[in-house]
Amino acid sequence: MNYLTIENATKTFGDKTLFTNLNLSINKGEKIALVAKNGTGKTTLLRVLNQEESVEGEQARIIFKKGITTEYLTQDSRLNDVNTVLEEALDSNNPQIMAIQKYEAAIYTKNQIAIQECITEIEDLKAWDIEARVKEILGRLQIHQYDQKVGSLSGGQKKRLSLAKVLISNPDFLILDEPTNHLDLEMIEWLEEYLQQPNLTVFMVTHDRYFLERVCTIIVDLEEQKLASFRGNYSEYLEKKASIQQTEQVNLQKLKKLYSKELDWIRRQPRARGTKAKSRVDNFQEIKEKAHQKLNDDQVEFIIQSERLGSKILEAYYVNKSFGELKVLDDFYYKFKKGEKIGIVGPNGVGKTTFVKLLTQQIEPDNGSVVIGETVKFGVFSQDGLDLGEDKRVIDVVRDVAEYIPLEKGMKLTATSLLEKFLFTRNQQQVYYSQLSGGEKRRLYLLTVLMQNPNFLILDEPTNDLDIVTLNVLEEYLQSFKGCLMIISHDRYFMDKIVDHIFVLRPGGKVKDFNGNYSQFKEHEKLLLDEEKETKKPETTPDNSKTSSSNSDNKKLSYNDKRRMDAIEKELAVSEKRKQILTEKFSDTSLSSNEMSELSKEMGLLMNRIEEIEMEWLEIVDKLN
Image (cartoon, rainbow, N blue to C red; front, side, top):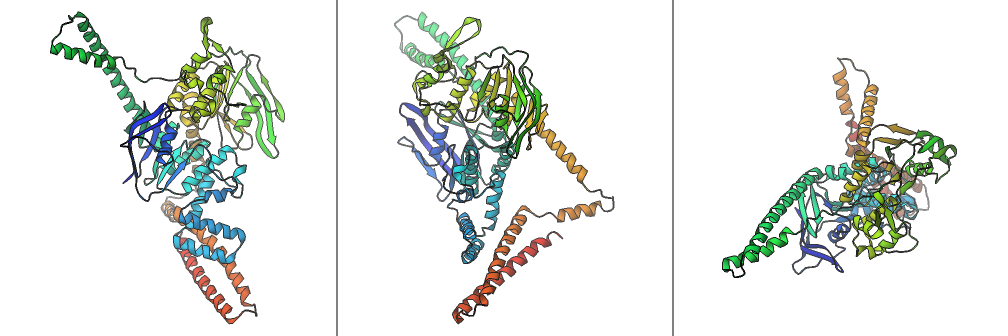
């Protein structure tokens, strides 16, 4: 079933053309990822899909299937800051969610009549499961304080609430712009599983290559204003893309040989030519143009050298740090060695950024000490990005750091040339910083950090908003980096490729040093968990092992049964309170006969409802026997 078709669509901004005669078809159940360099129009295309941007072209058509619902996760927050977390999560046009929203409001006001009416509506819509689903999704994304105002949330918390909100709405078609940003590794792995549901249709932009590998069934590539589609996951896309590039290279070489041959013929022939010779001359011009075409292989060049690093680098002696009752670091001791590449992992809120600030002496420890070697020059790439007092042109941002940087053998590179190597053209260097895309801003920020020639690099979520092409080159640069490197990242692919060991930050301030990359660490943790489960299994004799196994299977409830039981128990609690209120009213001697009749009628309906859901609860419990 086709959800969306785009035909012959063109989009321009001023003199810049993002795409020309673009064609795209999206069918139900497809998981599509868009891959492109920063600044080529990824977010614009998402906005077109969400009908927030129009397209150009006389024959351009955008056809949506009637009646489908769409949700769009943007990189910027579109939340209402005055709402509570739960109010914002339930802010939806979905009838089931609207019924739950009214129910939550009725509970808050303790209006028993409204509560009963909401219960009836929820039953009619079969929406009890929605409430459990809402709270499950919020919990999975570490959102627990439902009455907290949205305006008081951090940027990362708002991003997670935005993601929760689009998932809770349960639309037919999900459009996601960098959905893994601000998620910890456990959240990313849960989201992978969630999006793999067969009937869920997804179009996304993400830099997370493991995510692409495990979720996507189609990769679309936007390059040189054209869109190409590749069926399969990320690995298959890379293989097909490499094959196409290799074929293009071979064909170009053939054209160059043909051009040389034809050029030699042109030079040898007399001016007076016949019709056949004239036709060959005309063809020569076409061959010349094709032979001189340049294949698009532009990529960032990291040519910056780091300063020399001495033998004494960074030493932490039993460092402790707490904020009130929250302990973020407990007796951390470590001496850094030259060339180390360390990954820092841990759940959101455990104190990864604080850990970095302690080691760079931006924060004082409560106890212990941090000693930094004389030759150490930190380069810190934070999540906050560039802190500009005023909007500046791209070239001025770089010149504020240095007019030029020194290279090997006394050579120098000007700020203009350096920017060009980071894919900022001469025209783009005159653009204001505020006009850059999110990925271009991150790339410029990375340049300002590296051009200071640091020998101890600390990168806090460096992969956010960078395109995959830039990430590949950055990875190569970091692999050959001679200094020390610390990376905080939720990008598993990036970590696996670069780091040689990992600091695992645990709640309570303990730091575990694991020798290996992230995937090896996860495998190690899984083995430990399996061993722990194995030791906790009750011993069974050969005679009763089969019975034991059978009983164990019988005692397992399905996920839907568990959710339904929770919903029934909540409804029973509310109904029992209402029953108590009605019982107390019966003792009121001032009630008229009509009021008493209405009261009796409501009590009868309530008692019937209690009996119905109690029977349903018992039916579920019977499955345990």
